[in-house]
Image 1 (tube, rainbow, N blue to C red):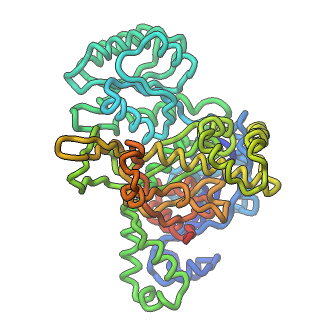
Image 2: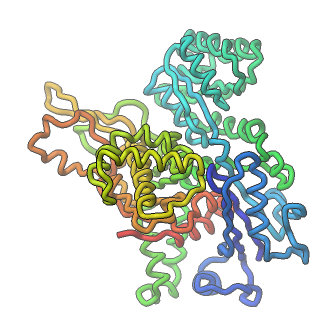
Image 3: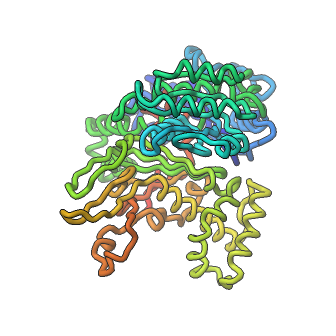
Length: 552
């Protein structure tokens, strides 16, 4: 048995969990017995398992992130002695993940503090290279602050100076294709007054010239493979790896993160990248877990009489080849989907590049605390609808003013917890706006057109109509007991197409789920287990599935 610690430094809270890890040990060596260990581990269904035994959480110390990190670490270990020695902030005697043998404690950690990884994306054609650039940045754990297509102009350069991104992801053209626009954009970027890292992942035919232009202007420029080498071939992994490398080697420094690196011995993962990778491995590991349970005569003979076996089997039987996960935090709402798009209707035509199976979008203006003021601005039209049917008896004329005052309060104090029914209701409104707008931005759409052969539907983006499994995670969604996401995420296509006024409705139709099964990440394990899954994917997925709570 050994101990694992996973810590996530979020924009609002730094949280961590201490796990016990068991592998091929006899029952005499297991000093902590739980129902779960008896049923899965001791009976030999699994030969390794992780058990959460302690949790700690503190407000993120934004001015010096190491303070909150080590406070959580010390709290997790406050009752733990390793080789007879008490472990605390001033006596770090733990090993990094590279030193695997004979370690009493393994540490995994991630960070999305400092507002995340801000990236400006540049491409040529919005539906091709620019879309690919944005997919690359988002799958690498970044936040696309601004995106530009075609030729940059002086106004664009001024905007980029004001945005001051961590990275500029510079793409454009297939290999051997357009060079002129990329060379023009390189010259325009050379006039920036700021000096972010520039990652060039565009047409390789002009990469040397682009590099020379920018390096002569003292930019730190990295060159990697084209994200779109051919018109129908996406190649995001090399650029994604470069973005992670830039994050680790350059952006991690400052606000105490480098102090953590010095003491722990390795760099953190960007939280969104860690979660993205975890989402990617869930389906395969669910298959493995189901296979082990189905082979167990103990499970199969007791499934109807044993509540644990019955519950875990129901959860595993959800469609894990097609699901959504929403991680709603204080600064952003991260929306993930695992879904393989198929065009099965001859009346539907796909426009643009095919969507990836695993997709992430992040909305920097949609967060429960740090971004609350932006939520008010972005969701004003939705708020006007909500205010007409509020449940706390505030006059409609006063509703927005009172709500705005609450926004100011939580903006000043991001760790604030609602103290009465009115404030709890306002938090629900913020969450409603975050969920609704992030889902509409993530999902694709149908656009209705009329041809000589009748009406056709053009599909742009990802079709989530048939996705049924939805995970709600993040501090708010994990804590609330009455937050039914199906009220904000679904869209009735049957009602839409059966309307008498069909030809008078909007030309664009959102490709949101028609119905969903809502699962709550009740202990907010998503980022915590995502860290551990780098080394222990099967055990982490099992722990995550067990933690989910079904909402009917």
